[in-house]
Length: 251
Figure (cartoon, rainbow, N blue to C red):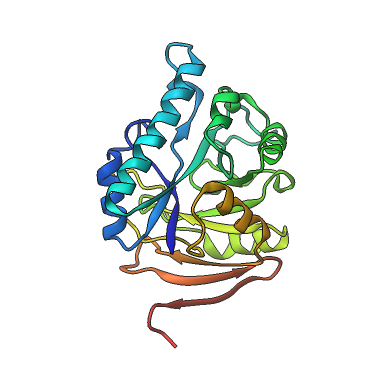
């Protein structure tokens, strides 16, 4: 089962140009079995100052997307992409953190999670049974932050940017004992890459996803670079790095 671990819908993510039902059809057409919906959770979206109401809208969009997925046979798991309000010391950068493994009540209980420091967010997520993954480091002003308070690092296959930085990010991820993930960060502003993580069929919810990523030593990713017409399979081993990298059909 191939899931893209970083997808958006226009119902919440203002930079996204595709509604949930179409986003899911495009994902299926590109060869994925489903997505983890990680809409943007950021302070600038709360224009009326009602943080609780925004949290409820955020959850409602996931429920709508999940129902749309059930109608066409696309698996939809819950995730969050937090844009933090704090800037790491000495770094002029934006910080996007992916949360897996928490249920929708987490959003309702922490409607101002974007105000948390990295350590605060990490501890809060871990206490709720989830994991914290940094999204797309090294994209423009994005910089890799303190790995002590991360469970994983994402490579991003978004075609608008210069590439995935697969090799150096895999090296750092292995050195730090973290897990490597992959997502398309699809906004319908480019062609749809085929990308994500190959998962056991029994991963039916975000809690099982987080448990798998937390406990496994080896993951296999589908990676499609900007210049590539098709994805290649990358196998990553925690503490070791990339152990295989090949196209479908190769020996």
